[in-house]
Length: 388
Image (cartoon, rainbow, N blue to C red):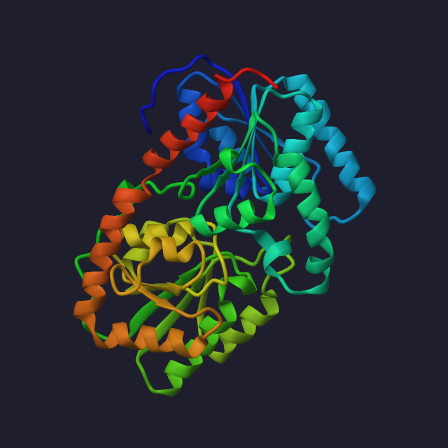
């Protein structure tokens, strides 16, 4: 737990689109706030992690929110529900995560006259990264809502990488002075032991992609690279960890995953709770994502001193500098991904050097104590300011 200067206690609401996100990405922030004496309320649609949050002594309430809903009446009911909750709870600050929660949470907070609003956008999300017709139709609507919801003197927009900050500045969603750059949600680096080198010198090489199973995580490119390297006769075992996300339009169908498993191209592990244990059994971690805010799984792998291969896109290139602490490949390029994996198999000394540098960077920049300290500084900046 991080130590930060004490401040008067406030009621603070953290609002996310899944309880899984709150548990895995914001649990430490909530506990740090609670330790300081703040009254913390966590909100998300119902799920299996709500009870886990409550078991930690945190207050969590389910929200009647359908992540995929486009029904105007349903969305208005959600907004009204949030307004009523905020008026009843009277929080000093509402902190929303992901685009839908930041927009709805901020709009409801403005209507309910909540003194301070923080919006954290981790990447641009489906609406801005997908090229399908529904995403293109939604884009101008979401842009307008974001401008209305996120602007204001007592509001701050927290972004995870400079590319997203530049994009939001160009779009004019919010005054540049109200943007704060914080690198992700942080990683408890003490949980992840450093590796001294490759797992062993005996084949097969064990390669892992651990992420939500969405097409825009580069799953298709990973499978194509696996097929390519298997065709070359290389002794490589490809692992895929994570579950499909049926609430996301970009989710990989489970039937497709089963087809790949039956083909023998990949071993699908499903959801894995013990990430330190999983990383301890692999040699190389890849993330061929199309765009990220700041990928936590990649940072966790870096904290284990594992060599990394990822794409040269926003978010990923904040974690990896090509040839220094990992390898970068062009986005949507399965051939380049396969060649990078093969290179690290053929050059174990390079893999070891990159892994050691990755761990040093994780400790210096991405430890959760640094991220929590920066987040609480944003809270104090707003709570100490006069109301609008």
